[in-house]
Image (cartoon, rainbow, N blue to C red):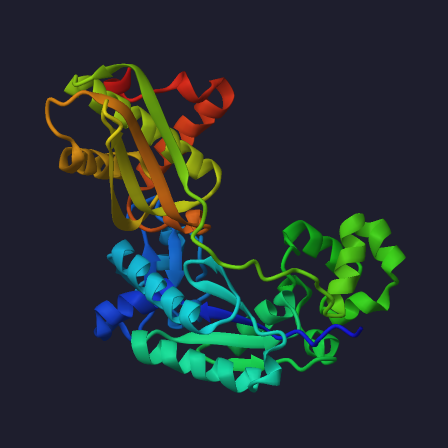
Length: 382
């Protein structure tokens, strides 16, 4: 039985962080805008297309970016707005798409395979894009292609704020003229090897046999040869509420000691925050659970700006605890849970002027990784 033709759409919210800032301040439209830290060690989290014309790119030191474009505008970032708009777009897609994957807070894959029996997948995707634009005023680009890899590459070619359809059988022709480092996974080291082989475009890869590439690059060489033909078998992972990270403790003796309970709450929040960072994720929701001696269990959660920082999570955890806890009542069990997880942890490190704080967390995590999770503790939990 012949497999049905695949229809994979890749949606990307164009310059998402810049676009949100422009919505908040329309006077920024059309200007070179940099999103990121203002400090000496700040980096560019995102930049407008106008700024890119000066050679600026994300992850560039802010100091260098300002040297390239002295009149660029550095914005005061709004993590809460990023979270809000990401959720709005997710809800729109979830209500329409038969199967979708949320790759990050601003990137989505939709699998429309088999739906061509009922509608034109390309027109359907165009209509969905327009609905997102109408409801959010955010620019969004997409590509419809036979697989995830080609769709992602094609989306970059459709930017800014455009769309493209790569027809079945046309994958290799579409890819051939593009630079070889457009293929996901071709890092700087691989790129230099390919240039020494006079491979500059994706089409140039096919000047060599799969065996020659395998000898030059190992197993990845054979994979790269397949990719140059547009062959990719990655599946769209069905979106669901991402797994939560949680911890709880049933006390040997029921206790109403407020100082002890707060210290335990801080310890547990530190624990789940550390696990969150190890998984390179952000959380958008925190919950606290209390169980009393009669087994009555209460919990309360809060939707928060995406974060991975202990101090922010601890503050939310304490607030929830005080809203839940019946003062003076013994507690049998205490728990903390993080949910609404997203894979965009790297961006969080670039969001604001907290570079020193982020470096501190990095150093703390390195100590914990080397000497164990209990190697460092907040003063209150010691």
